[in-house]
Length: 278
Image (cartoon, rainbow, N blue to C red):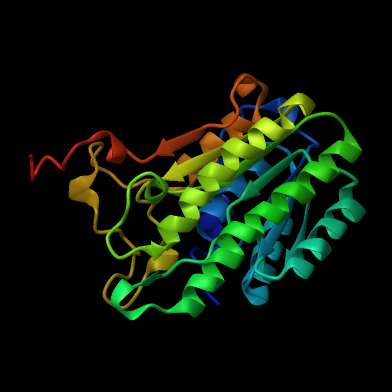
């Protein structure tokens, strides 16, 4: 069980968010993997906008802490702990969403299993875990979300978290990059299938995001090592991603679907880092 910040830290982050979309008030959002990191930041932003938020997480103890913090902040929410690699959990999750709120306006497919394998020492268990969670989990959640959106009213949004690794390969990042490439393809294909129902489907590819869940004894703040590679010269934070989620789910983005947006400080725009020009 890991928690990134104290309640006072989270409260300061919450109060620093400026709500920009009053039309979100009372809408329902499901954010998978929302007990930590980027997912936590997204859920916090949507809660600040007045949305009812469904929180999920693999670690039940960690999710319970998030549950308590959201309650203390006054965010209307429910929590559903479980593993997205289990199809039966996804059934339970959407049953809880429907029982609690009757509909769904926004799904954010954020949860993902991370890890890498050396092709010379293939670990099929890691590969299967990531395929089950990152691809099948997002696929099933998306289709369950479409079903629920159809029941409630016309329209909705599905936003998946991809990665810069979906467009350019990381070193030593098989099968994670494979799964993120699949998320990009799912985004485009599903966007076409549900476009006539005014359900928009997009994805966001984060770059290097500062996240204390990456912390360790040799890196207590969880700072990525990629700073010299980033043209804007800083790391992203979860609220950078949350801002894009809020925009894409808003009426201001009503003509955008089937797209992948990279929020990466310019990482993918460069042919090579400034210190190593080609």
